[in-house]
Structure formats: C-alpha cells, structure tokens
Image (tube, rainbow, N blue to C red; front, side, top):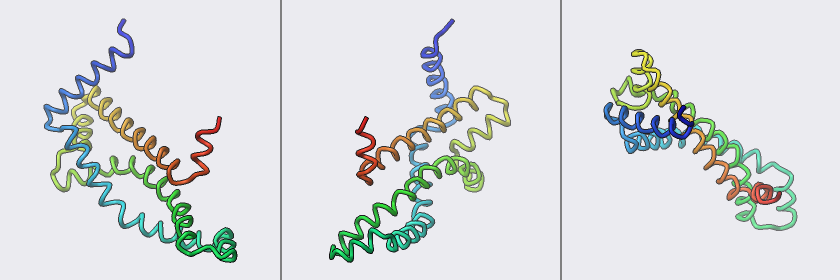
Length: 166
C-alpha cells in the first residue's frame, strides 16, 4: 500500500499534467491572483485604514504622547502601525474570497483560470481535478496566512516579542 508521500507526489504530477493540458500554468495563476489583489486593495482597504487611523487618533496613548510633548510624526508612526493590524487581517481573510469570486470574473471576461477549471471539473465529474484544485486553493490560503503571520511580527513589536518568548 503506497504511503502518503508517494500519493502526494503522484497527485502533484497529475495536477501539473492536467493543468498544463488545460493551458493553465503557475505563472498565469500567480499573475491573475496578483492582479486581483491589486484591484481589491486600494478601495476598501484605504477606507478601512482611514477609519482605523481616526479611531486610533482618539486613543489614550495618543493623548498622553501629545501631553508628554512627543512629536506628531512619531505619534503617527505608532497610530498607523496599530491601524494596519486589522487591515492586514482583513486582507488575509479576503484571499479566500478572491478565489471564490474568480469564477464570476473568469466567465464574464472569458479568462481561463482556476475558477473555470473548478467549474469544468464539477460539470464533468472529474473528482481528482476537483480535489487537486481544492488542494491548490487551500495551500495558497495557508501560505498567505503564514506570510501575514510573519508580517505581524515586523509591524507590531509586541507580537514579535510574544513569538520569540517561549
């Protein structure tokens, strides 16, 4: 009976062959995800960032810092750091939604991508391809979540200290 690693290697090879036969390369996949991310970020994230920054400007630490005579530029650095954390979390959660909304955009613009591949596999009853695309989406979301977790450590020193402390 084959082990889990052997089955994973075979699955990767099969997915690669099927995706290349359908004309989908990982370059196209990464490029389309990057384009969707660039289109999503500016609008909603900017509005959310503005409202979080306004909320943070009314926080007690900002009032205390101004009372202590700390320059506004230094205070704004801390305000934006604290306002960025919820935005980054929302961005990480939106990555899964990007893939879900891809099908509609791909059908409207006749753009072959992962959503069209999933639709074709579901309509054709191709269960291995459905499983492979679900695996690809899951791995993409996991990688994005991991990158966001690493970014948290750079943005917020409290999180960095908690990550290094055992």
